[in-house]
Image 1 (cartoon, rainbow, N blue to C red):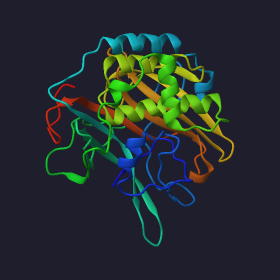
Image 2 (image 1 turned 180 degrees about the horizontal axis):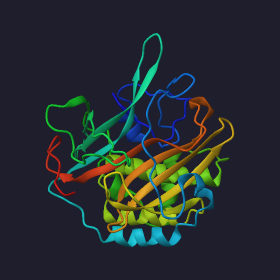
Image 3 (image 1 turned 135 degrees about the horizontal axis):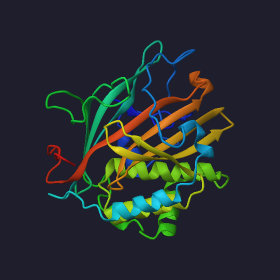
Length: 318
């Protein structure tokens, strides 16, 4: 099984199949993690960083506020129609995930991986994972196609009632009420900082997009929530790893208890207002011997839409 890396908290471990439990609870990027021992230095190759027009991720704290750009993204998202041919949520993503090999010593590799998730109207689900496309020298995906038949590396399923397929329809659209609902799902401590709360909101939004096809009015409300967060900054424009033009919206978070400094970046389409991808940039992490800005994980949404059945093929053009 291959796991997402977003913002690793090495105090926790994840067992095989835990995607079911974590997705059901919409675990935030702060706590969704894998315990990995790299030794004195990471024995992995990291993706090339993306370039932004205003600020680097490591300079996010000094980047301009994102209010105007997020409000514009909300307007675009509200007017972007869903692709609907059935009542099954379908989400396909490509990213660099960690593969953990347990033995006398724990080894880990970052693997390009395609993840396809189907969520049925009865709450059942299926997740397929397969080897994804490599990156070119600019850090862009060489292919944006979902997995070809016969190349699956793993399939996990969940029975009826595991998930709430109607959650996107029941979440509030009022931005203040939605903000409270998202923070409640994050279970943050009362002492959480402004940066930690903003990170949790961004992570919740990304995690919901990873399981559900988000309705236009909910996507708009999500961007309105983030627009009110002073810790969310605008890095400017960039080209996402699938070649699409996007805004980069970032939240930086320093953790004095671990000496870790990370930046979580949301990539939002400049034309549709849809979430295109996420990146985690680790500026410093003593446990991984990271002392300069490093992309330690990313995901790109390849295709989303409501399809007829679980396991239905991808929807071209979405």
